[in-house]
Amino acid sequence: GFHGQTIYHEDRKQSVQVGNPNYLAKAFKIPVIYNFREADIKLNGTGAPLMPFLDWLIFKKHNKNILTLNLGGVSNLSMIFKKSKIDDVIGFDIGPGMSLIDECSNLFWQNRCDYNGQYSSKGEVRVSMLNYLMNNTFISKRPPKSTGRQDFGVDYLREVVDYYGNLSNFDIIRTLVKLTSRSIKFNIENFILNNYNIDELIISGGGLNHPILINDIKKDLDIPMRDIIDYGIESKFKESLLMAVLGYSKIKNIKNNVPSVTGASDNIVLGDICEPQ
Image (cartoon, rainbow, N blue to C red; front, side, top):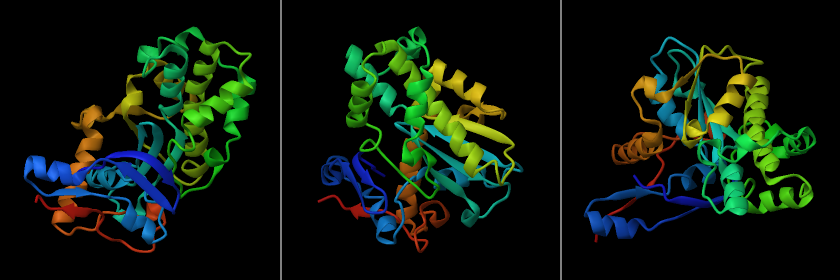
């Protein structure tokens, strides 16, 4: 299973990933399953997030209402109810995860990430900037919804920096960290907790390694939290596991989109097969 790197994603219209499945199929001499979003979009779905399918497989037999939070470039969540069916799953993209923080680190210090909070720990949250960023229409949009770096990438960051150029670089990145946490808080409180009880929040993704962000999330949410490793899955391999599961599902003709998440009109098998030449 090969996802590629998403370079463009427009909700319900188009999702573009770079990466050549033909090359991989030839190099490894095995079928490669790719293009996991297009079929869902053709059925008027958002095409993302994909993670709720794996989360449901992992947690569907647990006797808890589990909310999973994935802190990738974009933050997204899955709500898996105790002993639930796949049609019961709730999931959607929240907004920025690590994307703006990483882009900010690269723009100001030419480093690919804010490793261990080395920059954000030196700044202060600027409330006026945070309030401005929280007014982003995607963050408050009701699900189903999906997004990408075209909404929360370097172009958006440059707009923010131009607008708040009077602030220190450290304050800007610190406020962006708080933005990720506050957007998560807003979406969980307004679209999950107003209707459902959460027994446990399980976090995965690269953002787990950012101590400032995790501390903000703990302060903003009064929910018991655990690392996905507590359930036997290394966080940095979770998306790889998802691709393997989606690829296996395609080979076995198992329906693997989640219409309750994407809004697609039907439950289908995602992915195309590239046979080795």
